[in-house]
Length: 425
Image (cartoon, rainbow, N blue to C red):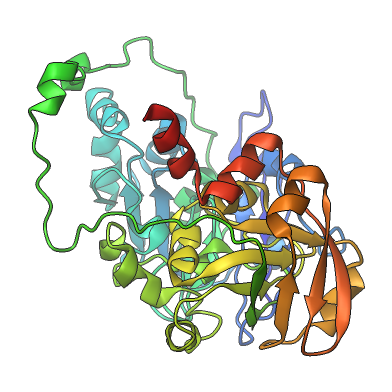
């Protein structure tokens, strides 16, 4: 069972880490080969993270579990304070020698100010390893944890394998928890750490290096530039308009909470192809079904459907999770519900997100069933409800779309890019 752990930030006015508010709450009720993954975040996450209410825990219930990595930063989520607080906690102390305390500054500006204000020295002296600003370990591009070993991270997500390690145990956490645990070598409830809470005041002398800002070229200068592309940089594929009748097999049926990491994985094996859609498409749905790409190619990259459960497309907002499937022929996803950003991304690239009017119809559809939606172009312009014919089972299902007129036009023409190109001449 995967669990998610939430622990608190320092309440206002509290002078001691021992008074830290602690709350643990497992989430994402999914089974993954018996491993336990934990999400440890600050108290305010209780108001923003969708978590099953019947899975509460207290931090002390998982305290004492040995860790092998404590990772602070990434391009998403952390601010300057996250690094400063961690630096103050570890100042004049030493990280346990078998724990890798990895510092991944969010931006060059944060890195420069960590140096300017003296925080970076404290981190380095305590034994931290400093990495380049950017995504890095959050998406499996370096800092991959050991298999089966606990890695505490302050990044936003811990979907299985996202770290770049199969069989990872990534626990997402607050900077305070990451820092204290790195010093102790085990998951440590900050309330049990006998030290004053760091006195952090936002500096009034933050450096902003405007010399690094490059102004845009003039129109004349832009036309004189010739783009240089290596062999691994390929143009976007053509996005064909929606046909009058959409007919194709269900190439994949999935359950609830399918993440964009499962649709299109991250990691250093895959992301080098992010500018090469034909190559990166080979990894589409590979974490769910390793045969998917071969089956899509065998079908001739013709129009097909996939079927999902609730919250389809949760997680990172990466466009490659729609570009890969679209390149292989995906034209419509039928699900019980969609994650908001992925829903929009599907539309942007000409795929139709459809929701079951009767969620129980999900049970009736099987992989390889042949589905048809007649007169689809006309129907989505005039109404919100469509009929899906299951030719294999001789049954019909009612599905809805929630597209605006503008979004309908994107799907009709094949993509938002196509719409913009036509408007610009």
